Length: 311
Image (cartoon, rainbow, N blue to C red; front, side, top):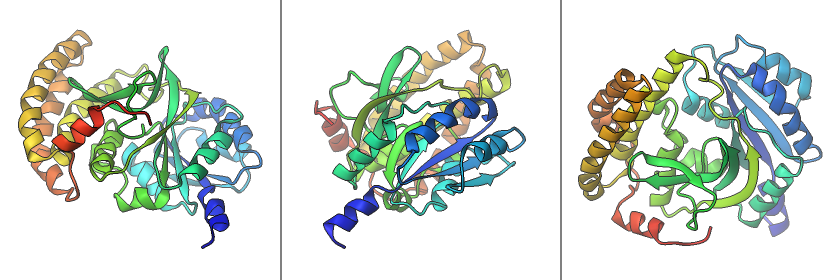
């Protein structure tokens, strides 16, 4: 393949979006995606985990034949939805994009230009939310992983699932997201695995407006489910992706961290689902570890990540 044809292939992109109770939000954001994609080699795949709402109608009203719509009323989760959608992709790269993100008109052009510069690297795209600006995922001593502030000097651990670019082949080679996590933490799990394998994530400081948590807002039951998953998934991510020496240090720190997090959840009225999540995480950790046999994140990875560098 010539350099010219390689560049052309590298600039084909599919926007992959998982929907859940997203009809009203998508009606606001999708028109901005269509405008940003005008004249560009961009396609769309939607995995709809709540097809009862109006998402299919919104999509059909905004797009021509450049999309695939994959409904699944069983709601297998965000991670499984992403994997199912990426399996249907025929382009060289995917942009995982949450439905509550707006795209400025030049965003996709700038993203494709960044892809052409280095087609092999994942890219973390900036998100402006809750009064702050974030690019990708960062380590945290209490919560293990958090949204990485745009002001942090070192590059991101990996892309956030809310706005992440992956070479399609790379995403598939690493098995995509760990589906058992369901949601919240699946991007961190993949980030640790990619970093351990020597793959570094570039950042694109285009700040996309992001509403955040639209699918659980105002629903106490779903807020409890989110607290359960975050508590469980932190333990599963560490069990799957850390080396044994790092685990020996991380386990006591995680135990102390969960005491602090438990106090916070108690103040939010979410202590019971949080504790259930901790219990399930401890029970499921051995099986989760067996399900990843690739390179793991250890002290060498940790020290390399903490050393300041520019992405």
